[in-house]
Length: 361
Image (cartoon, rainbow, N blue to C red; front, side, top):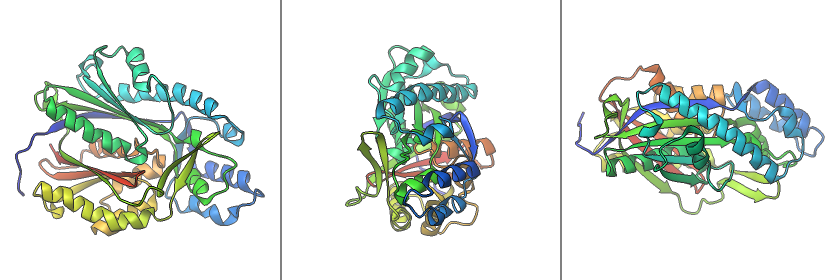
């Protein structure tokens, strides 16, 4: 295997936390079935998406009873601010438990979300709550959906390679449960109800001249962002009076199967790495069909995406933090060998792809 000399940054630690309401998939299935029965949708046919989802458990931020009632966007957003602040703090605390760094060592915070709004942004609230360095740089990122966690890792890599003595914190928080629309009778809404959940993920990244670089678990080598033309309607939100209404195309798995392989080859060819050298795939668990499409497109051996399947099973799809949960499982398992290549991948609205190339330590 060819080891190339590149400027890189290190992932020091990861912390993750789900929403405060822990529910089995069976409870969410029953809730959705009862809510939509008699509402003018063929729920007896659509409910099978729960049975075929490979999801066993999820975490949300409100009681199920709350989802039965009408809510204004203002009410949803107020809950977002309080609940996101709570789990964001917990994810950061969990991240820093695993390192010798302190909050004051963070030079830039890359905050990602697509499920709530505030000005000042939530990262400013966290600076006050946790008493982070008052000179910290803030990079709030909104609207990248499921691709946001991987995109923020790429941006943090760019920052810490430009300023190699610096450290960056990536924080992705999504409360997808707050976007549920009880009067939306579309298939997309039922699919979203079967998959989406709430969570937060935090990642500490150090430049190669930082005093914490020696504690790196993996090294980020490169990243790539891609937007696929003429695919704006594949995924996203429609902004309505009551909040965010999901846009979710049935074509997503087929697009993944068609586009992922050549997209990944672009990044690998740039770095003179063969696809066969990629031993570890940290893929966003967008759904079982998406994971299957990844495996088919890349001709992966069974079990290669076991961490993605594990996160989908235990947490569902949390949008941007999900891939950070997969990264956490990969690092926690500690079953990797040193000096092997891996690839972290997410897809999101646009329709877009975010790739992060790394090497294990």
